[in-house]
Length: 93
Image: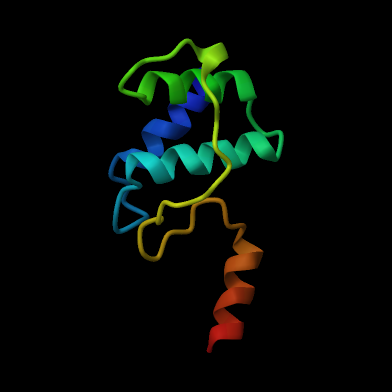
């Protein structure tokens, strides 16, 4: 749970290595993506999402959507490995 909260905090707050912050929806979608990959616990993600909902449902009753509707900040490199970023740079030039 601590790791999921730390990731969420890092995404929604300013960082020197990116121009903008993630909005709440996009941060939660990024963390849900990590749960899909098995990098973080679905239970922890469900608790974080439940805490972010206005009606504050019980985590066990919280249904998580896998639909991605958020938009990461421009020029964001979160979740991209260096090799992928270099390859993407060379392909786009």
